[in-house]
Image (cartoon, rainbow, N blue to C red; front, top):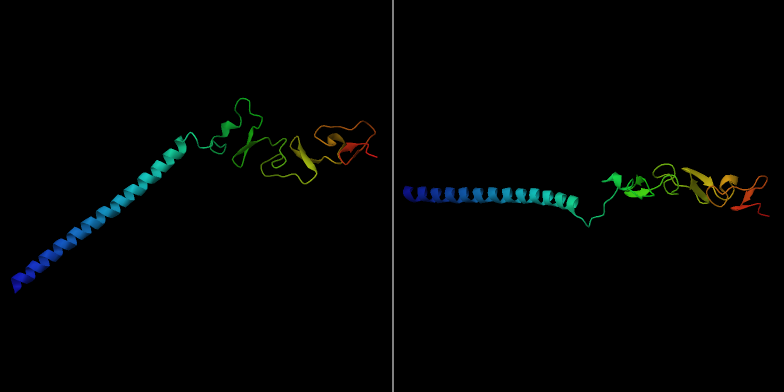
Length: 136
């Protein structure tokens, strides 16, 4: 009876040892696979030639040769001197009826120096109404 009890305990301890060993290897493989996946994803994101090159990652894109939009705002190249959604600085929006002229929001409907458009001055003595000089 004692011999059979020893054998049962021995077999149970072997089964537990094998189970613990397999469980440890499985979790270790999963962790290694997760690390591999995150590394692989990061490398692919950096090296993917089809992925759009945004200026928040590569700010020199906006200052490249031939670019008319030298500033980077919200992952897009813009010109803060003329862009109505980023006038003078990123995120500064001009109101309705205003335009961005030299980095400042001005009223294109009533400003004599920017009547109807940036740097469109009215003649001396005339006024700007509804974006037209000397509107009657």
